[in-house]
Image (tube, rainbow, N blue to C red; front, side, top):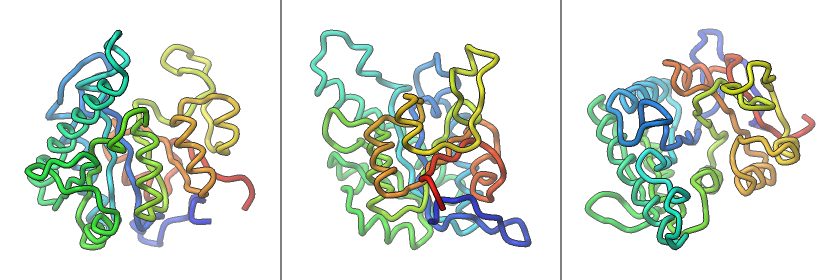
Length: 251
């Protein structure tokens, strides 16, 4: 199973996975969880880390959230479907901002949107996305699934499976998965590894249940780590012991 952590090459620069999907929440684009909008500094941190792993030869796709711009659940009384569509449009804004930062660093980038908007992004076509990845381009998937009632977590799992990614890297604000919120509970215990079924049984906030189920059915590993520490995406790919690995049981 390609999901297990492997040792890196003798030069320390051999990535564990050939192709990965990075899942970013909208919060990754803001300076803090309590702020709205797009932070140039936050995006630059993401872009420089992506530049680093593309240079290693890793093929990278990204699914972006939009919570730094719009949170539908904070719009009481609004139709859920309309609120979700606004959220999808927010992810497109983040995708364009990330593309701009990557291109300034010389990293060729393509946005594929589940909602057609030809002047901004390509339509989502899995085989075209794979071809971009093979050419060393970063592909940013925007507008979620293009339909309401599906989270960007579920989108990440779906897109990762369609492009045949070997793992999902889930960048968060903490350094892994804990049994309770480490920001509120100083005695929270961090997991080094977890099985999918344990995540579901415990109700741990790794990804939503639909996303976890998709990954479990297809043995797609999820590595949860602290995105905001510079260099952590590279460390994750090189197999350094950071974050929490969610995987299948057995060998």
